[in-house]
Image (cartoon, rainbow, N blue to C red):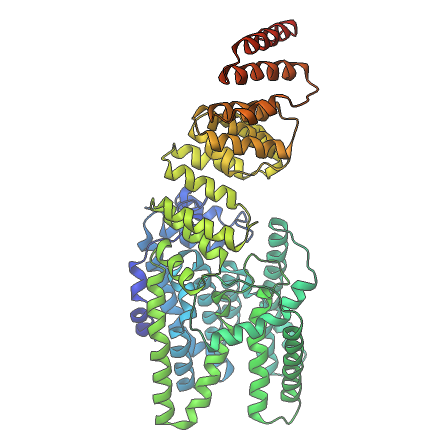
Length: 576
């Protein structure tokens, strides 16, 4: 099994880092960038809404010499996963799974394409480490080394806290050994670390990303187990991101029916005297559901459904399939081998998709052209290799799919900055700082960029949202467009600004000057007659009317109006 795992996942060693969280866990990690000292500090703080210090410590040790080199990270992950797989048959012995069934289940499980996220994705080293902790813990339990088992389980929790619900499995195993009340007490060595890790995970997560739990959360919790079941049994089109909406109407009614059937199977299977197949189905259902508890949507998460969350539930299905095929003898072995090969082929292809950000998101967009998240990430990957025109086209697709996609204006501004070869510090620092603010608070800091009246100002004004200050932004953009002799654009922007705020003096003046330069003199003359309350603006409009008349050849009247405008402005203390 160790050799099979190494051979099957060898392609992952040629992969690089992706844009999908990898920088946050490597080159930008506060632990990896500290060198070896960061490995110890990882145990003292939370990061990215989680406390997984062992995972960060291992990543830090792997990247200590060169944080940007992907090979050490992949090498560590590859080897740790193979060790975990080697322990799997012994771990399943804790549940009295026969050795040949355990081997078959292990082969099916590791060949499944959903394992790729846990092995080929550097940021998901936490999966591999928690897997190793759990399998080693169960293997120790099968050898009756229960304190060692509890210690290894605690290490797994330090790698990924979502392991916590599986502490209940050890309670069940202890009850299986003996029905005496002391079994519950002896299981505390696993239950207490599991409970502590679970509570800490929820507290840290909610403090870092608080979100209310509402009806949609419970609808999601009710439906996700069946989503995982279906995707695991039919893994075609495996991808990194899935769009998700809670079920409603007939779908929700079907889910309720499925839950009633599941509860009936569990209830009948666990009663005394139940037939072994029914009992096995009931236990399998519970073991499938248990590790999914953290990923049901009740705990708010950015991505409620993901392939990596099937890491432990899919093992239950693999054991079930191997157990069903075992009595068939040689025919069952052949069927198992065919299944393993059928899963291994898309597995290897999937590993190559993770070789870099561009490969990952190109494949995701091809599989799910309606996924806004995939298009946004592909745009980022294209920008990362300098293909900014293509990145902008991807962002236009996102706008067509979802007009109000969060931060779309910021992504577009960054792509524009790259395309126009602006100072990288502008795109990374200034735009980044602006985009970190809500639109209603952006105008003050943006005004300093706009004052430069250069390409950076144009990008900021044209792409970023400014909340209630957007009329000012449009007026400023119109003035810069006028300076650059982009007359139609200047007029359109100024007109939009005045639609939002009719009192904007700059926008009205820009409209008139743009129309004069465009030789649309009658329109310009009409605008100079606009009634305004500000006497300074009224004086300026008088002068602009004189300019229009001059262009129309009415020189005497034009000179008179220009003189009146000059006198009025001087009387108001203004420069004419």
